[in-house]
Length: 166
Ligand SMILES: [Zn+2]
Image (tube, rainbow, N blue to C red; front, side, top):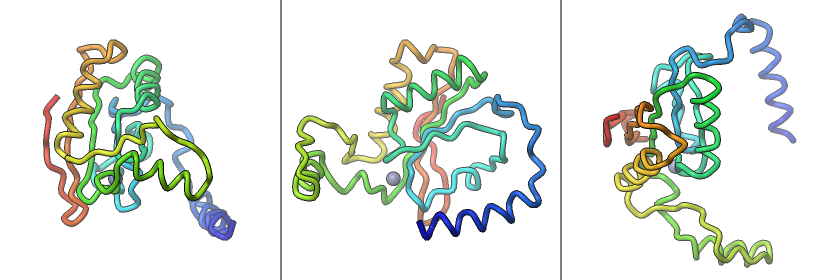
């Protein structure tokens, strides 16, 4: 709640000089990005995106989960995007555990049995990018005229490295 109060104060300043209230709903650059929720990633900044430019879909790992696909289908079918870029990153927390570790912690912390749930961790960064690009290319909900690329962002240098070109 303390953070929420800080947010409200910050927002008062933001809204006071806000001048982007007339943007159209479809992203101006017709692109969707799938990337990690990691707090060290500022995709709008490291990709040169302005407000209104792109859909940025974030989750733990930047994985192409069922819910990421749900968002991409809406992005493409209803809002005109025709390109997807999947971006994973160095030092990702998803490299540090396996499903059984988290399932055990959930049992210990919450007393809940999460057996069988897949939190989509991965042991190999480059392979996870390739896997998620392949998931999109193989999905019948993502047609072949949608360009799908994959990259790795380096949290230490700020650099983006291409892994798969769409
Ligand atoms: Zn991450």
